Image 1 (tube, rainbow, N blue to C red):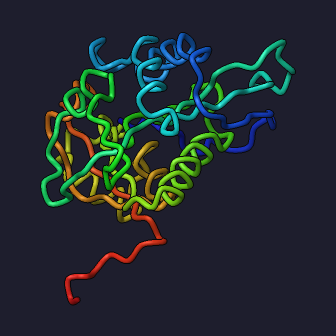
Image 2 (cartoon, helix red, strand yellow):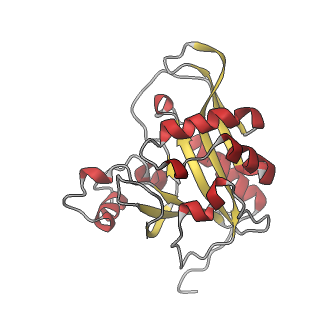
Length: 235
């Protein structure tokens, strides 16, 4: 599930660092879920207990963004959790992208993590609304990519929300909407940002997640590790 940021213009520079998630961040990450995904059903949101389990199961796969300043640049008394990038390793067939988010993340526990898995499944990337446009989404994606390259895995797969679709649903199907976003004719706050970060759309998934905004549709996106060779159809 991805709900990343899109640039919103110039803003006050704030001090933020990306660090591995730790148990002390778990409660704040639960609150971040509620703030970033108000449209999702309660069963789709992860809790403090889920985050603690992630960190036991695959600690390298979870990153947090910690802000030392308020959005206006005022220094904070202590760092604030304002972003998350999490996931796990799994084998995945790109020719069969259909899956349900709640199932693949094992109810939020990431119990499907396979230490030998060829792909990093991007289960969650989110940035607090007050800190969007400050480059945190890109920094979290970069941390994931660096991990994938260091581990020598094929790349990142994920399902992505389409927050801009409701404005077009009366005249475009989801497929038509995504096609126009990919072509650059329409900007979507999440998908456009993912495309700018090197992801490709490999299909659509219906029933992926409970999302009243898009009638449960999501994009299926892939980022390929540039260190590896992927045969083309001609080879």
